[in-house]
Image (cartoon, rainbow, N blue to C red; front, side, top):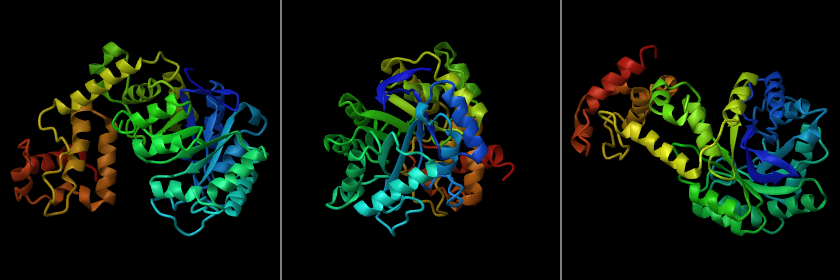
Length: 383
């Protein structure tokens, strides 16, 4: 296993971390954690809301049961949010860890997580889902989240304090400059590197960086014959291989993967036990990945000049999935399109009336109407 430069609670932070939000069952949680622990993948990212079914059945209780007997080997992280999971403070929801805004509420939250996890202390505690500046500011108010958490830290209930969220680089820098943040968890993958500046700023200031969604929410977790063929010279074997090693090749960054089975955990451990690239090599591969998509015939560049569509179709979104299907032969692209077709009217490409408005606006002169029909024929056969 490869490791970052950071330690948490005196243990090395591996290039792979365990995201505890996608377990299908209590048994799967135990299998994933055990498989990872064998490879010294120790960091566990839990929350009160993940896999929540009841007070007795949720990620925290499953994780607590899974680590019984070797808790001291693992790096256990818990968290709660000042917001409602989105961008606003909502109604206080302790069961799921949302809208925690007072020091007393924070203590209640910490005690709840300790009880569910069956531990007497954490290794890390985090301000969860600080997506916008207002939610970080909420934590800093007198008598609020930070005051309660600092008191718990002084009592020895955890070692490290961090922040998670989908904020941009400017906001990440503000977190770091606050002086109390020791670790951050932010979205980062080969298709979205917009937070890289903030991540490097954190790393260079001694703040550990954990990257959530390294497989783009699982989108890059499947086979890709085209990608493996085009990047065989770099030793790339699959989309998942490229995606995970790309993230871990950014110095100081651990890839937080939500694994669902022991087999998946072992595969990810094997991938991140392979040699990593330098940051320069990783960037070169990212550009090659991007060029593969952009170099194909009739590739949508996502400029959105085609919108609005008279039928309210998400034309760039549909054609983005076509790009991945045609260029990368990415199996998950078809699954993603079919899922969106069933659940989102903006992805029902067969609603296209061939009015031509989008084609008249497209700077790349794409035959959009024809491509909509192609998408339905090649990707929507079983919808």
